[in-house]
Structures are given as structure tokens and as C-alpha cells.
Length: 398
Image 1 (cartoon, helix red, strand yellow):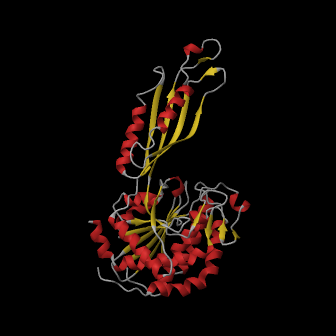
Image 2 (cartoon, helix red, strand yellow):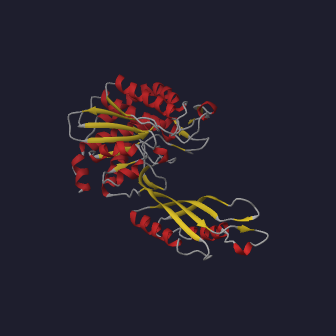
Image 3 (cartoon, one colour):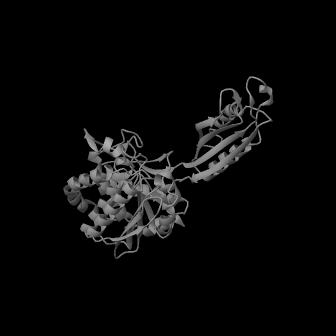
């Protein structure tokens, strides 16, 4: 493969370094607003901010109105080349109303700590400033660069994916702006995620007078939880976790209902199928034949396996990082993101391209301040390389 020389990657650094104070101010603006998925007013505040900034930067802006969730937004830049690169991010967080005021963005050493700072307010800004840096550096060797921000990713993008998948289908590559791993790695594979409910139907009875006439649903559930956990490893990489249980009405009543909510994960579609089938088989195997087991659920996020095209993209990212003076690797993770949905459409996708951070969804969620500019430059350089080597990437997809 012919070696290509890139100039714009390094040309973005002066702008990015000078823009850091503005970027940090923008980060505070976005983090210090309650943006839980169901807090539409807060999510829309951030979406409106994104729309206004994109217009100020002379991007083509579009939004997708929603009634229940925040509005989704799309920014587009037009060039003179052939490649279409889509960046994916999200505006929502997992935090309830009031948390932003209780724990606003603050600095602790090299860490910036705040609700949603890593997942993924900083990722949104990394995407925005990478595109702005390429724009100001005069890079135009692309047909279209797009940045799509959904508003319900934290609950599986039930509406967001309906809006972004048409753009995915037309893209040469997709870059997802979730935070880099705490060790700096990017993400080239993600487990698929399934949510299942196992419900036991028994028979109620007086626990003191005639317990023998009952069929204890909670006792049967206990047996089934043990059976569920024996499904760990039923196929390579499959994990099963009983996460929420409930049942019963009073201490002196033999319970006739009990349930468990389960998280099931798999590294590939074959593992997901095997895990699903094994779960369904439990419905026919109650310990107490007087009980009935009902199981519902499915894989909401399909697995994202590392394909040759994704491996090629990861190699380009490593090369770009090396040009910028640091090293990265790619890895698989058990968590799911919009990248899982992209992968199922056969479009090569790379994730974990935000700033370095960790402890997402916790009071200590953070990003490393010193990683913001290097990771934004990395994203800009990767976009340039993908545009230049579009034909090589397309050959790996066929």
C-alpha cells in the first residue's frame, strides 16, 4: 500500500491548543445542565447550544424534533472529495434532575469531574473541535463530514437510531465519540447486550394454615437464578447477570409471583443466539412442576465484532497517534453503544475516540484534562486518513 503523507493533522494543533480555554468553558456549559434522558428541557438546551455554535461556524445544521425525548441534531460540512465520514455522539446522561447543581464540573488535579463529562459531553466537544480544526486548516478532501447527536443513547437509542441509521448506510466509516478507556485505548469491538425478564407464576396460599396448597414462586425463582448463572460461558464470551429481583405480597402468604431482570452479553451473534436459546429452554424446566416460568426479552444491542475493515481503521488511528507523539492500542469492551447498531449495518466503525477518562455513571466520572487536545488532534488526523484511503477501506468491506 502506498504511503501517504498528511499535513493537516499537525496543522490542527495550533488552533486546538489556542482553543482549549474556550473548549473548557463550553464543557462547563454542557456538563452543568441536567441532561438525563427523560429531562427533555436540559437535553434540548444542549442541543440548541450545539445548533447555534454550528451555525456560527458556518456548518449546515438540521434537527429532528421529538416529543418525549430531546431533539436530535445533525451538522454537515461539504468538501471536494468523495468520502462520507459520520461522527456519532449523544447529548443525554444517566443522571437525575438536581445532580448538575449538586456536583458541577470541577477540576481535581488533572481530572475534570462532573456528571456526564466523559459520557459524553467532552466527546461531543472533541468531535466538534476536530471538525472545526480541519475546517480552519483548509482540509476539504471529503464529500461530507457529519456529526450526529442523539438524545436517548443511554436507554438504547430507541428513537435516535431511527434518525441516524440512514446516514450510517451512506457513510464510508463511522467514528463514535464515547470516551477512550482509562488506559487510553480506543474500542474496536463491543459485546452485544440483551435484557431479559424471567417470571415465575406459582399458587398463593396461607403460609401458616395450609402452605401445602401453595406453590412458592420465590423459591422457584431462587432455583432459576442459580440456573441462569450457570449459563455464564454457555458460548465463548457470554455473561449472564441477575440484576433485579422481586416478588411476594406479605410474609404470611405463599407468593404466587416472582421475577428477575437479567443482563445477558455476547461477543458475536452466534453467542447471542446460543444464550437466547438457552434462556428460553429454562421456561420448560421448573423445579416445582406446579409453577410456570415465563421468559421475555431480546438482544437490544447486537454485538460489534472486530472486522478487517475495523482493524484497518484501528491501524490508521495508531499511526495518527504515533505522528502526534503518543501510543494507543485498540481493545474490546463489554459495554454497548451506538457503535453496536452501526456494525450490524456492515459499516466499519471505531469507538472510544473521546478524551481519556473513566468511572462513567458514578459520582466520580472524570476525564483527563491533558488528554483533550491530543485526542481531538487524533480524531482530526484519523478523519483525514480515512478520507485519503477510502478505496482501501472499501475493498475490505466487500
